[in-house]
Image (cartoon, rainbow, N blue to C red; front, side, top):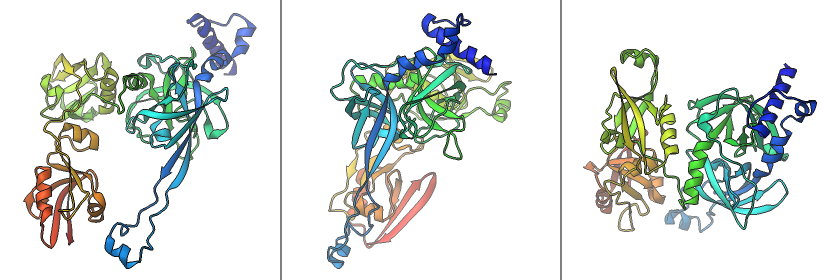
Length: 461
């Protein structure tokens, strides 16, 4: 076993020099191991120290003037507390673009990046996305830095050797080895990320987040983001965000985007199970079944409809909505994707426009003032952009709560609630909310939709 592993290691090292796999020719080649690859790649992996200020839990009565006067001003707002976060990052360009995880730096107020030769840089997040758990940093006053080349992660195969480089537990830069043990992992929700991962058995531990997963040529395969564990330690199941998605984040950051823009599908879908495949007359359960389509969906414009099965996007198989979203995100906004559609026994390829979620109808976002009983409450008319931003149901219409404000929050409203009625009056537009709360009487009843459930909130003024 050891001898086979050693030969595999040396074959990997040989490929660094010759870009092809071959049997080691000398004892020197056998003894090298991964050292040449690590020596070349490790300077591009950095340690990240982030400072995050978290607010303490606020007293619900603090913002009420009556209670503040009653207690004689003795009610103090809880002090914020500072939390230090430790992680890793990968330099992607000579001029100081660095990728890490959003959960490491996304909400940081101060970020310090330290290279392997102990140089320190201040950094700021220029583009981040909580759902993908990716953040792009820009180092200040950085130039001629070592960086890693991004490999086309679609060509990564199960069984390839891989190295994870990072700063686990803050002990300093560490390298662990393993193989690619799985692809297209979409079932596990790990940390903030909800998506599509490369799986590896190379040891990944706390502090490795944001570090590099590289191949035997020293190219970046993915960004280490999480582990599957019951004990808190590495059990040999780690997840990395594929390099192709990182490349799209880098492109958008270099173009000046301050938020990640992903193509909008305007669809809800479900994984093809064996039962669904049998009901559709399919021999092999493959693809994503379209269960809902928004009227403005680009898929609907391309001729797709509910009940169709999408089996491929740009030639790559898709077997879950998350994988389909990944393929569209990698392609980017502005172009088109070719989707293979299965309808009954008929298979066809359709061209789908990759667009932003449209702001149609206009959101007309409104913040209520002191003339109403809930100043500070911010509401918005629902459109595809609002649905995407707030994670609402695809078919949702009406008015969404963007910010409950101090009085709305005490009344039980939350961001993401959809207001359908106030005191029996139907709510279709933010102005309806203003009108209903300007002179509502002594009692207010909110009819809302929350998480697919209908809820009534009642309170007296």
